[in-house]
Image (cartoon, rainbow, N blue to C red; front, side, top):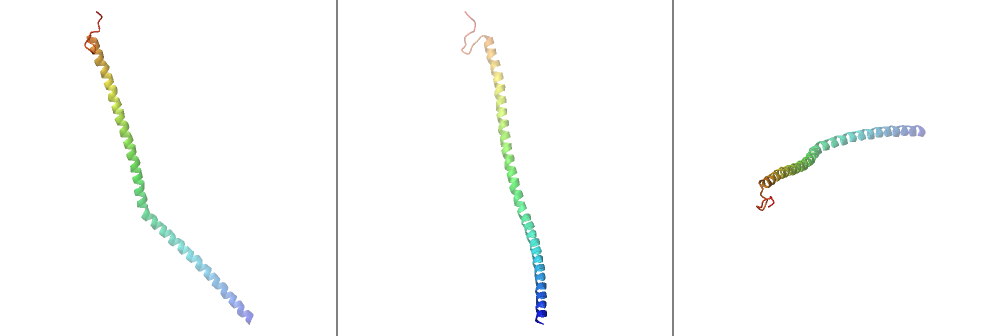
Length: 111
């Protein structure tokens, strides 16, 4: 009879063990789902912040590119004006020399 009682106790303990293992498995699954839900919620809250940060960085890069291109365009315009001015200046010098007057009012002809 003592052996029978021990066998029943063993069976009861084994059944409890199975129940506890199932409960642990179920709670682990619930925790996994809860954690996934919280992470999704956190991402939904943080996404706009990441988006703002991304677009601020993009805007900054675009500003720098625009600034560089504007500077390059200004330098190209300046260079073009200098070239046009340089082209006009020798034409004036040639017309002065062609008239026979130098820069100091003397003639180029030999006496």
